[in-house]
Image 1 (tube, protein in one colour):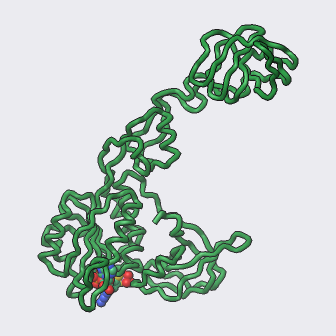
Image 2: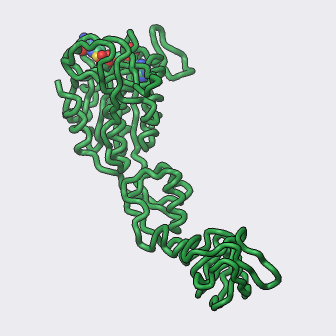
Image 3: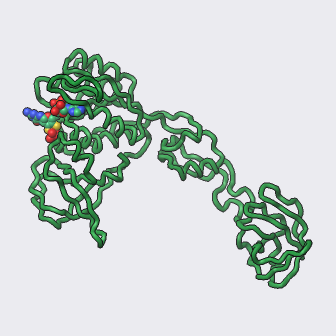
Length: 401
Ligand SMILES: Nc1nc2c(c(=O)[nH]1)N[C@H]1C(S)=C(S)[C@@H](COP(=O)(O)OP(=O)(O)OC[C@H]3O[C@@H](n4cnc5c(N)ncnc54)[C@H](O)[C@@H]3O)O[C@H]1N2
Ligand code: MOO
C-alpha cells in the first residue's frame, strides 16, 4: 500500500492551474490571481495632509508666530499657489499640500482670527504629511500571482485603480456518488438504503478549496450507467467519485470506468479512514475515487482532494496546517495505516491545547466528524501513548470547511 505522502504527491504532480479569465473587481473576492497585479498609480498621488489644520513652512513654525492665511484647500480642491514666508493655507484631512509648505499646524494648536492664524504650538517639518508614494508607487507589485484574494487585497487593488482582475478560472470538479442504496436528501429512500451525504459534503469542500462543484446524478451499482455517468465528466478539470472503490462484487468504479479508458495510477493507500482510494486519469480528466464511507470520503477529501482543487485553482496546495497538542486520554498503538482520529480540543488556563479522541471512530459516523475540532495524526506503527503525551493534530476549524 502507498503511503499518504506518496499518494498525495502523485495526485498533485500532474495537476496544473486552470487558465486565466477576467472578472470585475467586485467579484474578485476569494479568486486566485493569475498574474502579479501592479499598481496603476502612485498612492498617494501627491503629498497629502493627514490632519485638519494649516499648511506652512517649517521655518515659520515657532510657537507664537502669526501667519497670514492666503488660501483654502479642501480635500479634492488643491490650492494652486505657493506658500511663501509668513503665509499659511487652510487645509483638511486628505487635502493636497500646496507648493512651498513642508509642515502642518493642527487646528487644535491654532488660533484663527480674520485672515490670520497664530501658532499655539511649534510645528515639526514633515509631521502629519503623507508623502507621495508612501503607500505604493506605479508598477509596484501589489499582489503576487497565486494569491487567494481576501477583503484586504480587494481594497488594495481598488486603491491601485484596478476595475478588472485576471484570475484563474474556478476548476470544475465533477462529483459522482455511486451506490444502489443511496438517495438524495428528500427523495424516496430505497429499502435498506440511506441518504447520500457524500456528494453534498464534497461539493462544499470543493467550494471551500476554490473550485466549482458539478454534482452529477447518483449512479447505481451498474456498469453501463456508471460508465455513462463518467462520460459526463469529459471537459471537467477533475472527476471525483464516491463509493464502489473497495473489493466487493458491487464495487464497480474501477472496472466500469476502466471500460471507458480509466488509467489507474494507484488503488489503496495506507490511510484510515479511507484505504480503498483510487487515483487515475479518464482521458484528459484526472480522477480521484473516494471510498463510500462518509467519514472516509471527507477525511480523504481533506487530505487529498482539498490540495488537489487548490492546485487546480492556482494555489500552491500547501501542506495541511499541523499543530501540536497533548493527549487528554491514552491512545493504543497504531497499525500500518496512517490514522486520523476525530477528537475534541480544549485549551487549559496556561494555553496548553488538550486533544481527546472520541472512543468510537467508525467511518460511518458523520456526527462525530461534524463535532470534532481536530484530527489526531497517528503515523503507521505509532506506539501506544499515555495521557499527557504530545501529538500532532490538524485543526479542522482552521481549514474553512
Ligand atoms: N472485504 C473488505 N471490505 C471492505 C474493505 C476491505 O478492505 N475489504 N475496505 C473497507 C473500507 S476501509 C472502506 S472505506 C469501505 C469503502 O468501500 P467503497 O468505497 O466500496 O464504498 P461502498 O461500499 O460503496 O460504501 C461504503 C459505505 O458507505 C456508504 N455510502 C456510500 N456512498 C455514500 C454516500 N454518497 N453518502 C453516504 N454514505 C454512502 C454505503 O452505504 C456503505 O455503508 O469498504 C470497506 N469494505
Ligand atoms: O477506510 Mo475505511 O474508511 O476504514 O472504513
